[in-house]
Amino acid sequence: MRVKLSKASLKKLFNAVLEKHKSWKNAAITSGVSTRTLRDWRQGKYSIPFKVFKRFRVASGLHEDELSPIFLSDFWHINDAAKKGALVRMRLHGNFGTPEGRKRGGFASLITHAKKQTDFKVLKNINEPRYSQKFAEFMGILFGDGHVSKYQVSITTNSKTDKAHALFIKELIKDLFGISAKLKYYANENTVVVVASSKALAEFLNRHGMPVGNKLQKGLSIPIWILSNALYQKAFIRGLFDTDGCIYVDVHKINKKIYKHFGLAITSYAEELLNDVIKMLQSLGFSPTHRTSQKSLFIRKQDEIVRFFQEIGTNNPKHYKRYLNGGIPKRP
Image 1 (cartoon, rainbow, N blue to C red):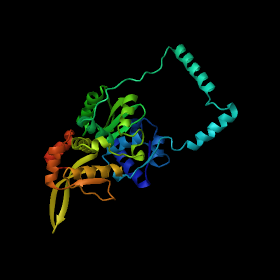
Image 2: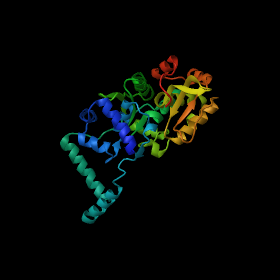
Image 3: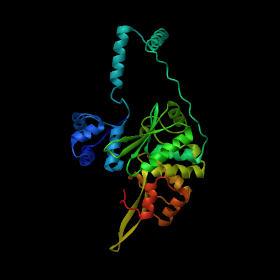
Image 4: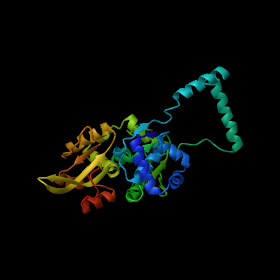
């Protein structure tokens, strides 16, 4: 998946990147690309890989709604080229998708493995958990900052403010699925990625409601098994809040007097997901506010914020500390 930004958003993002890395050379080295590639991204000549965009955004402390990204599916630009190439090859060599062709390819693969003394990869089994609050919370985490590819599951977060939650996610994966995840840190980017490499896990999560690939383009719809159980709803909201939510100070003026109160927000570019979360919160007795032009829902009533932490809670220490300390960040 790749990301396309407007000129204004590119300027905002890369100004923040430059401020973080002090020079374009440092930013390029950290990203593992040449300064020319970085310049091409900066000038909008090419779209930006999603993982690079997310690392830049998280490290810079920018919200997605500040940049209004357009998400492009993998290989979006080569459909026509692939068709033309296939037609040319078929004209030269005939139809290569026949049983005879596949048989020859299979024998060739066996010979190659024999020469290199390698073997076919065997799919590793995972524990397939039953529906539970822990599983529902993990789905909320995935719907927030997660990504599922064909062979891998990853969750990207801030290595400074959310390290404890990253460790929690790592242990949650072990507890639920019986496999070990790794933490990948990206130097000078304030980013940590929790990675679980398992095709079986990716397929299992996909069967239970998590899209493979671009989750925004494919649509995020909360699974029925979560919607039909109040405890699972709370757990899912907790996971989503811990990744895509925040506590902030809501400042407003009435009759020239300034008032400061807690505010709680959950942000998502998936409109259907946001609407589902609003309905769940309402069914649980909360009064979230939301406008169609916004990408966030808000809980502003002070008693409801207290009840949110009592009944739904958080497994991200950052949120709980901010709750105890009076919010700290400004409204997103």
